[in-house]
Structure formats: C-alpha cells, structure tokens
Length: 264
Image (cartoon, rainbow, N blue to C red):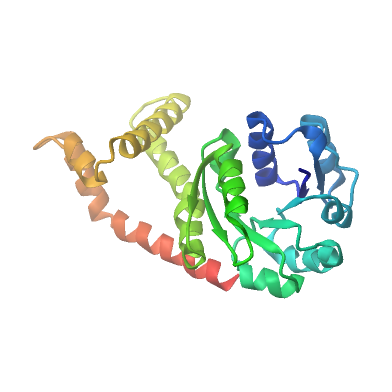
C-alpha cells in the first residue's frame, strides 16, 4: 500500500513518525509533497521518504492520500489533484472546518473519504484523534484509520456533526493547558521558586492529574474533592479560581473555538 502526504508540516510529520515507528508503513512506500523546499528536504532527511514529487504525482501514485495543508489552501489543492483521484483512492483530510460534503463537492467524485482531527500531542505519541467517515468509506477503511491513529495516540470515531466541538475540546484546548501551566509556573516564580523547576513541576503535576482522571475513571469533581482538605490550602486556591470565574472563562473559550471552526 502506497501512502502519500500533501503537506509536510508539523502535524504531517507527527503522523508520519508514528506510522513509521509502528511499522505500519515502510519509508519506501511513502511519498510527500510540500510547497516549501526546506520542509521537503527536512522530511526526506529525517524520515527517508520520497519528497521530490508534486501534488499530482502523490495523487496519482498513492493508495491513501493524507491532505495536510491549511484549510485556506485546500480548495486549490483539491482542484489540482481531482483529475488524478479515483474511486480506488482513500482520501484522509486533517483540515479543520472543511466537511466531508465540502470535500466531495470540490473533488466531484464518489471517492472514499475520512476526516482525521489529531492534536499537537501527536508529536509525542499522545494525540487524541477524532475520525469520521463518509458514505463511501468501508469498514476496512475505518479499521485502517483507527490503526493509523493509534500509532501516534488514541483514536475516537465520532459523528461529523461533533467535529467542530472536538476540534475545540481536543485541539485548541491544548493551548489552554499550556497557558494554565505557564500561569502555574508564574505563580510559583512569584513565590520564589526558580523558573525552570516551576515549569517542570507544573508540567508533571498536570500530566499526573490527567493520567489519574483517565485511568481511575472518576469524575473530575470527585478527584478535586480528594485533594481539598477542610480549611486547607487547596480549597483556598479553588476559591480564588472560582472568584476569578475560571469555569465560565474556559467554557466561553470552548464556545469561541467551536464558533470559529464553524466559520472556516
């Protein structure tokens, strides 16, 4: 099976690395195109895949094509590759805000299609990736998609109508987590802790909390209450967060991301 990437940016490279490490694909079976010469050279040097190809050569030669270009450039790419895509080709798009119906309209064919929505944690093999399918994709296509996504994290099959919400919760909110960890570290620095240590502790504490929630299956409120001793320091910190409206701000941030995604 030949795999082709159109676009070799950070997310494409994260996916590529997971697929190669898992052994699902060999480097000689992968090709990728990109408009930036330096990006192509970097991918070729690091992953030993074929990158001296055009978008149309990828479309003509690959059994599975991953569209990894920014949403604003996707229409032009689809117009370019449309003559070279057949119903034997599986198209996978990772572009935010571009529905399967929109993709079909631009390609004007009954080609099999899936949408992936990974997040930046794919770079460390911990992506939370949503998958949705069109009416033409087979169960075998979906099984392949799940296996691919599990090579760089976890995979979740969802209805496409939830993709914008997913994009906000599992995609954009990574940036919220970074902001939160930065704020934690800033607070510790203000109290006298060296910054490097503050960053390390903020990251490890957040990682541990996330792992505990996922593996225990407990409601986050229950886990929060376990740390909040009566009259203790933690409940005082929780009170400060609530006075600052942290819950409402986070909910508003998710809603803002969903609204923006639906406009793309």
